[in-house]
Length: 411
Image (spheres, one colour):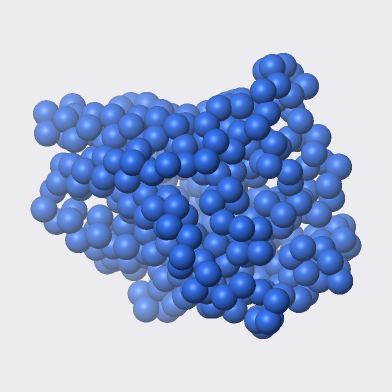
């Protein structure tokens, strides 16, 4: 990780006010989302005590992403991306309000949680492509690597603080968690509504099958993007163990909801540290190698977590997994923005969102299903080792990715 005299300073990023207003809205909204996920996961496990149902929450969140994200990407290239994001935040507020009301009236059950998870998945399908595609319009191109790292730092801080805050507030009652989530989402929405955002969507192509699938074709023919997107898909699909954390917290480590909040936050702690480092010292050389090595070390960290029965060691392993994952996130997302014209960013971001959704939500289902067959330890261990194998295979199958030197592709 080296800096260059040709790279704009961190102070240049600080002076981009529109970027910081957008960043603040994303961070506050992400805190609320993370709290919501912790509360819903713990609530589901309390209601059913079923690893299968925990995995099912991830599956129903992924289904709308699979069905709607390509349409959402076309929408992000056709209509103002800021308005799409605000609309998604308002819908999230409705979900939080329903959770609050059904909890207070004791009407919340397995079916309600699954139904609201489905709604959240649909909201996410539209929010993520618009958010990813909007960011490059808020900063000059030379500042993009720093902006991507700083944006990731904020989101990881939210991922760190959200679960921990949710765990602490949980002792006051799960309805208090849902109420606080509702308040934070409304604050995030208000911050973005009062921000003058650029009208970045320049395309006005009619919505046809060809235009909707244009992002898929673009990624398929760009082997660099295809390799980096699919690497993340299979690595997190195998190595992610988010759905198993309630089981580890309750049955293996025996640390309760407070410990679950810390386990959920631990990867974000490592990711936050690395994203801050990358904000100060952006990667300049051998970015493809950094990407592949970091994914392999992510798998090693998850294998250590799988075998650990000591709380502090489990936290440490998850912190390292988040640190290594953040390197791959910043490299992958920066390459995606630099390799894609603005008129296509919504649709290419939609393809990336599908890969991310598959690796996270579908990965949660995979973890829950394999845990039901092999137990949580066996499932997490096989996933971590499988991730190492994926990194080795991708280094061979995508040589252009392994050889990529600079973010810009120059030199």
